[in-house]
Length: 132
View 1 (cartoon, rainbow, N blue to C red):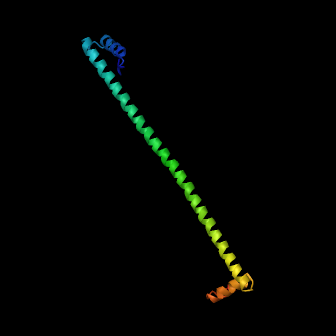
View 2: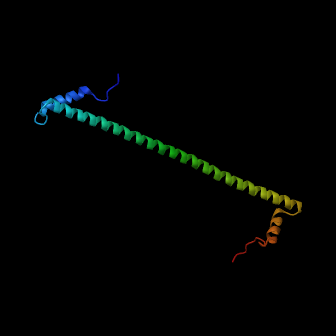
View 3: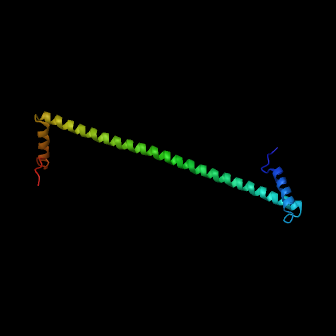
């Protein structure tokens, strides 16, 4: 048997109270019963709307939480990429310095002399700043 969404006992009790206490407004029991049913239907409708609103709020909260979690993940990945770029730049600089040191050793000069020769050959001068 299907469960009813209306509490019929409560509806009948309300109808009896209306008929007993408000005779001038509800002259017959039928009028009081109609009003009790109207109130019960309104309460059920109100409860359904409230449940629907709560479901939407929960859905919005879940979506917001998922967005925040994804933003945190993206932030971690961004920082990791930045760190990997920095490490790669340091490694490339180290490789370049080692290459230059190897070339300087092959030319039988010190690294500093080799770098200053390259700098002067490229037109940068001696690299010794004297001041203004």
